[in-house]
Image (cartoon, rainbow, N blue to C red):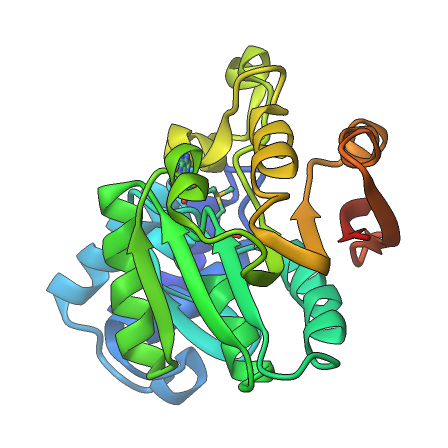
Length: 278
Ligand SMILES: C[S@@+](CC[C@H](N)C(=O)[O-])C[C@H]1O[C@@H](n2cnc3c(N)ncnc32)[C@H](O)[C@@H]1O
């Protein structure tokens, strides 16, 4: 089969999924399966097995299976991180939260940074990469996600300590006044909206998405119980959902934190906050 025909067939199949960026995705899949860009294959004859594989992937995308899980790898800043079933796919919004963390951490001398609910490790690894003076610990409970965290530490060769633990216990084993910065992108979706999430998102682990107390359980627990773990003058940085700005800020101020900065994503939406323990 010639590549142009295959490319057109893939785009036609994937265009039945309104969430698919068909041309971009077809090109990514071609590069993934054939090892070269479509433009470099114009005169090549594509093996039947490869064509079948590409059409099978196009069909998966039509059904909403995430492109990132097919590719097995996704970029976060300039790091290629392993992803797959069982781990949340790193999002661009989270890069904005990391940038806010960098600007706090770069001013600190040898800080200890804790990434709670670390998933693929994207936040912890980005902090270590861009703020190498920080000692970074990443905490994750899920077996599947933890294995991606470990693989990504090995892949990037960044010195991050991975701890397999439940954040609802881990505060008890931490020393008081020991941590300079806590960063967390916890599960925050209200369980009641489970039926309305995008098909692609429904392939991601429920444990990474949904949280009790209308999505607020982790914000409440971390603000209250990790306050003693933070040093005085330390920072707590949260990513939150698009409609949680006021609620999360209220939780933080009720627990005695001072709001230092609102984090706004590339679309201009408030998606996170930097708070200080004064
Ligand atoms: C929204 S995802 C964030 C992942 C990653 N930090 C990111 O930004 O892409 C939340 C993560 O919290 C983990 N998690 C859920 N409950 C947890 C708990 N009780 N203790 C530790 N990790 C937990 C999930 O497995 C998931 O990896």
